[in-house]
Each structure stands twice: as structure tokens, then as C-alpha cells.
Amino acid sequence: MDMSKRLIMTRRGWLQLASGMAASTAVAESEGLPLITRPRATSGDTAIEPDWEERLSITVGPDKADIVGVTDKSLQAAVEYIARRGGGTVKVLPGVYRLRGPVRLYDHVRLQGSGPETVLIKEPSAESALAEDSDWYDQEITLADASGFQVGDAVCIRAVNSDTKAPVVIKRTLIARSGNRFKLDRALRENTWKIGNATVATLFPIVTAEEAADFAVEDICLDGNKENNANLDGNYAGCVWIQDCSRVVIRKVIACNYNGDGISWQICHDVRVEECQSMDNTGLGMHPGSGSQRTVIRNNVIERNNIGIFFCWGVQYGLAEKNTLRDNLDCGISIGHRDHENIIRENEILNSGKTGILFRPERGEGFTAARNRVENNRIVDSGAEDGVAIDIQGVTAGNIIAGNTLLETRASARRIGIRLGPEAGDNTLADNRVEGFAVPLADNRSS
Image (cartoon, rainbow, N blue to C red; front, side):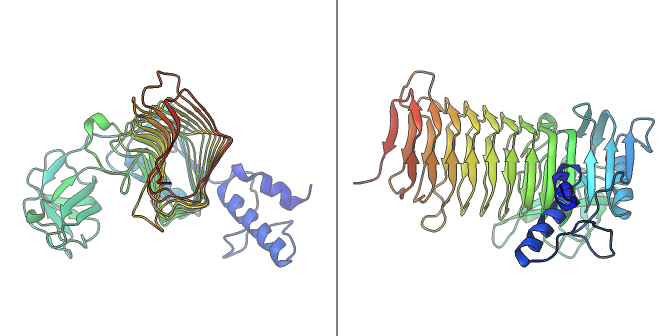
């Protein structure tokens, strides 16, 4: 086996090599360039990296660690140390770490726990109305009740725009105070006025990154402590929340008990989520967010969330396979707004509250999901007495639904195997096994 192929096969070892070597080899082959058989570390070359036997690492833990501590400050100090030196691993030793702010990751940083015994838990949230108006250029806020707030806290400021009535959501950190008056790490850049019912709360994602690439989160338990925290939806937070990132691995992460999403990635590309558990979150178990390309969601257990996997807007060329989705309150998988060219295959979707797989109606022609393949899934016991295993709503067309097993083991009641809505277009239904339903196929389209 030549060196280039051997290096590609060590992909799971470290992220930068995976993306760089694979992509560069593909480019070399397509352009007729020589294959790289002996990569070297060269200034400015971020695509190619040798497969180093040992990389920089630092430990964090309750004791006997390079950095001793069990707070977000301890964890962030370790991340900053690794990031400033170009990348490596932050090894988080067993223990319970209580967070008043997120752990923010950067390029080439791997956050690696020690399995389920490494628990990052969000502290209870505090909330207050604003006592004074702050304008978009201000870098401070004044709280009506500052009890429960500390310098160093991550906060979410929410209001309603007084002109457009649109929601305003701002995430900042408190860096100084005098009584109820706090300085922020950055200016607001939005008006937060009392007439807009402005509030501030200590809400944040547990692990986060923005505009970063080639990083990983592995072998760690993230506990959102939902009983003691207000809700913040998956466009802004979750156990893991990342935005505008590329080439990310999230592996063997337990994302649980968040009052919002489990794992959410927004406008992120080449994200791999593997062997994770996302459970008991009030929002979405996994949320491939708007515009995300080439997501891989594989071998995960996603249970007791509101929706298991939610394909947001324009999620394309992704793969969701061999996942177990169980006891999610609404549906197992939801797909819709311009979510094209995805493959959903070999998943077990069990005991969904309403629907196993939902194709959303969206806004009509040009907005629904198309050219997706739903293959060889097993969907069992979906919804109440009027539940549906696969529900194709709106003008959805151009998808292939083939080789799936749809089972209803309870009384058939009014349950439906596959439902085609009145406006549904042409979708290919082939070789699906449908058993135990009152109506195996409900075609509500006019003839």
C-alpha cells in the first residue's frame, strides 16, 4: 500500500489530515497532479499535514492535571493554550465540571473527555428584565434584579424590535459590574429597550464554536440541567452549538437534558456526528441547520427529544444512516425547505409521537424537499390512533422511498403507513413492506 493511501486510512486519528489528504488526493487525481507520498509541514500549507505520532496535549481535571479546576474557566484556559500553539488535544479527566459560560473551540482543537464519567453541566439560569434602555452602540446593560448574575457569566439578551416586531437575540459575556450595571465583552449592535420587553438570562451552549474548522468533540457527557434552566432554541444554543464551521467531528458525545437542542450545527459543512447519544432534550435531538452541506449522522441513539433529526433549510448532500431514533415526541425525522440530495437509510425509528418521517409542506412549489432517498429504514409504531409512518405533505416531489419496513404492532385504529397529501407531486414508492395499519397507503391526491 502506498503512503498516500495509508495516510488517508488513518482518517479517524486526526481531523486535519482527514480533510486535507482526502481532498488533496482527489484534486491531484482529477487534475493529473502527482500524489503526495511524503507530506511535510510547510509554512502556510493548511491542507496537508503529516500523520504525527504525538501531538500537543494538556489535561484538565479535579486534581493531578496540568490545569486543576472544574469550571468553564479551567476548561477554556486549556483550550486557549492549545489553540495559541496551533492545535492539539484538551484531555478532560473524569469529574463534574460546572459551567457559567460555554467552552469555545477553535481551529485544530480536540476536546476529549474520558467517557461518561466526564460531565460538563450547565449551572441553573438566572433571568432579569432590563432596568434601563441600552442602544445598539452601548456596551453595557442595567438589570432590574442582578441576583444570580456574576462577572464572567455568559448571557443571552432577548427583546422585540420595536419597529419590525422581529425577535432580537444577543449573546454576550459580563466582564465588569457596579451594582446592577454590567459591562459586556462586545457592544450590543441591537437596541435593547424596555418597550421591547428586553430581558437577560444566563443561557448559553455548553460547547460552542463559530467560524472555526478542523476541530473535534469526543468522549464526553454534556448535561443541560433543563429542570433549572430556561429555554433557548437551537438556532442559538444546545449541548453542542456551532455556526459557520467546517470539517468537524462530534463523536461519542452524550448530549442530554438541555432545554433546547441536543446537538445543533448552523451553516456548517462536512460535519460528522457519530456514535453519540442525544436524549431528553426539549428541542431537537440533532439539528443540521440551514445551508449545511455534506453532513454525516451515523450510528447515533436519539431518544426522548421533541424531534429526533430535523433537517433545517437547504441541508444538502447529507447522510443519516444506522441511527436509532426512539420515543421522540413529535417525529423521528423531519425534512423540508430545499433539503435536497440527502440519503436517509437503515435507521430504526421507533415509537414516534406523531410521525416516523415527515416531509414538511413548506411554502409551496420550489421550497419542498426533493431528490432525497429514504431507503431500508425500519419504522415501528408511529403516533397515536391517527399516526402516520411516512407523511408526505405539501407539493413535495421527486423523492425515492424504497425498501422500507413500516410496522404497526398495536391495534390498527386509524393509523396510516404512507400518506400522500392532496398536493403531493410524484415520488417513487417501491418495495416497501407495510404491515398492521388501517390504511397502508393513503393517496389523498385528486385523480
